[in-house]
Image (cartoon, rainbow, N blue to C red; front, side, top):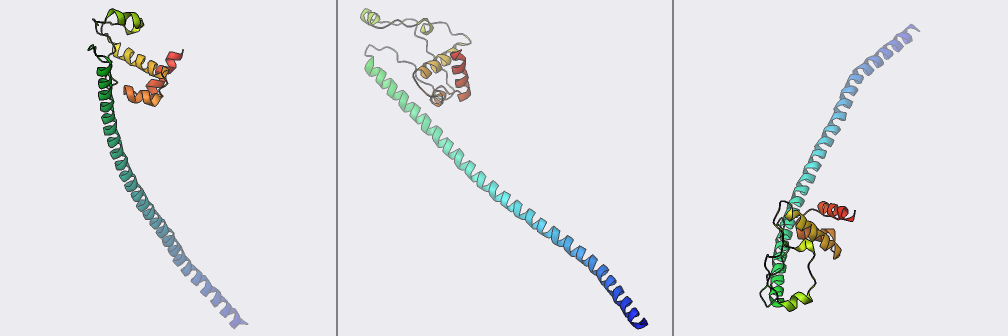
Length: 186
């Protein structure tokens, strides 16, 4: 009985020693394995983020190129419209009257003031309606370009132009256009 007891104690001590020894090894193994996948995952995330950033940069460059092309086409279209308006005015007014002011390219000011002296035949004066007081010639003041743009915006809105079309024509932002239209409704 003593021999079996000694063998049993030795076996238990062996298991305890084995578990303690393996426990340290298992802890080391799990801690290394837990950090390795996290490191691999982090590296994979960095590679994915770098690839996404590169794709976005190429798409941004492509969009910038498209915007430049669109601006060039808009400028070309504006010049074509101006030339067509001038040609139409030259055909319509054989008496040599000055043409109606053209819509500006982006950022340009508009001057809708009539010349101080406009020679017109008496028949034309009788057949054409009188201009409202707001279109009369007045000295150029500090708010004149703004009020001219405001009148242009209101006139275009009354004619049914959209906010986007008005913004492109005047070179102003859509928010400014909507604000002016909202303030005019009050």
